[in-house]
Image (cartoon, rainbow, N blue to C red; front, side, top):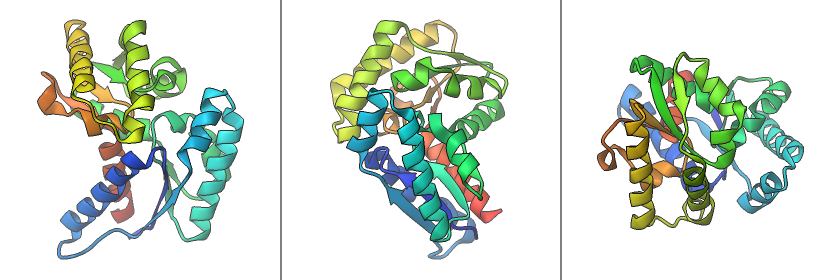
Length: 229
């Protein structure tokens, strides 16, 4: 079994999902009381949040690449950046790493493709929904990606940073997200990517009329599969 290195704390609320899912999958595959060989380097979220809002992505890439090197030095044989937004610097982290870095958009894209969907919606931070680093990587898997209208994107973004990364799960925000997904459904999407790892703490498929793709869970499952292959 390979040792998994998690660059977490982006935010720690969703890093918990990674740790739980990875260990669940390993136990399911190996049986008994097996668990994963894993390491977590959890950054101070306020530090990186301040950097991204200041547009200082170069400093973010340096910080996360350094976290990756520390995990490698401790024995990690594969790395994950436990966030959709922060995979914006995945290429920089990959260049400095000597082990594979599993991109979250590839884990999500592979699942959408496996489900045979041609058009899906995307919810996430403003960075994830509007910048090409994520949408283009998804589209390379062979399907169309649709995002909500601008006002809805701003609302989704605000809820993530004002509530979800702080552990606040509001029924009113869940209702808002569900209505946005309904609007995307009317545009013909077949499923919706929860492209912020904290969103799946708030909403799930039982709250929507269409399938959802929980990015943290899919990323974690891909890591477990890689570690066991």
